[in-house]
Length: 336
Image (cartoon, rainbow, N blue to C red; front, side, top):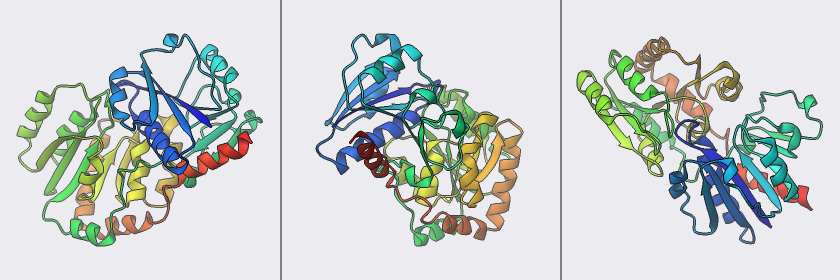
């Protein structure tokens, strides 16, 4: 069976779709050695270096118009928020089954299968009677580098003199929230070590970050450009600050409490379920004033660390990292 994955990624739109698609490709190849995977990256072609599995056939292009010839496939898998109808029709015409991994998409009515990481949706199922929906934690795709944090390790981290907190604003961080958070959190009274994770797509001035670090005399701050090693660092943290997205669900899987916000109201459905399980905080739509509230919460959690321990416990067994396997098995049933 040939599976062709089409994904969009760049500094502006973020790397979440790419990280999820790579994880999916790697995992289905592990589950079934008879599968052949073609991977098409649309956007920043330099990001293709993140696809290191030699068994994956990779083609990277800057725009949809670069697809002159469409290669026939058994299964079409899309991970992007939007696509032109003309390209989608060409891809559909050369495939037997189509699936979407993105929780937001502009042509659900042209897709056969939807796979989502939460039971909540941003669309009315009744509007798309031909779309088969599979949604919930059981379909969450977690990258292999993300490992569960043991209760013993987490409790040891909680007892650290300096509260270890990670700041992760995504692979691109187009609006440079990393710098805004550093400016706002320097007033936090907690003795903290902030691990500032910079992704592959971070293009802003490192000098600005360093200048801000120098102005913060209250905290230890460590800049780290990470990709595959990110979760090795996060194993030593008790809290992370995230802009929603893929990493929010990886944090739940790992057992790492997180403070989350989102770019606009339409994305709130993604955080609703993990917040309901008290495995993460949902701070709502992002604005600069929000950083003050985040700082206050950190001060509260520093005094009452049992809350973080309970969040760690709450996250146990919510996500089992078998999402790619379930998606693959569902696709196989559909294609037979």
